[in-house]
Image (cartoon, rainbow, N blue to C red):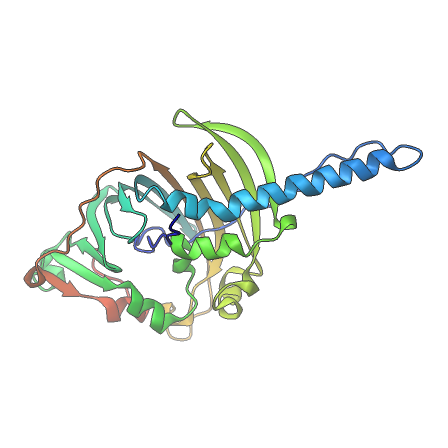
Length: 287
């Protein structure tokens, strides 16, 4: 069986993630006089935890084996008393990371594509983007310049590494739940940010732990993933002399229709303006 990494870090609006409190699991049975009940209960709880951890660790590879899927994403960001929401709907190549999606935010819809880890967004106002119809962001270049970046948490390829880093004590089963007509098992997971790539820098922005919720179907594939976190704005994104502010971001991703067709092609070069440098420096594109 071939293991595939999901490289959807591609989805620009899936920028941040993270967090719900991790709850304990296991049944505290009444101890018998000889301690046998407590021992049996502890052993059963440990075995259950190990099974839960294995399911979460394997989830990303199991999902990637489907090769493609339809995807929806909902992102809400709150900062300085203001809230911005975005909804995305499209299709994703789980092996290559290519995708096609329509993003709707503040009443405006934008067509988006990701091809070979390059993000293309259709410019709402071509005049503001040099007369070109599309804007281009090289995700690899942005990641290279910014180092540890909360945006990477929205990349299922990165998330796979995060999930595999968890230990038995970091996973708890919440229960069962039906999502879009599919039976799933719901888990809560907590990840030590220090163990992530670039964790020391990332921890300064999002804190010491990255909690998330994940829902898996009977085949161990991800049907829903939810992350909520608060992060400090990097110095490059603040006005000169400005103080750090906090942005709370909630992201909900859902996968369905595994095996669906994905047609993601880069726009003609003559219709594209590159805004990678502006984004890497913390600026905003005209969208």
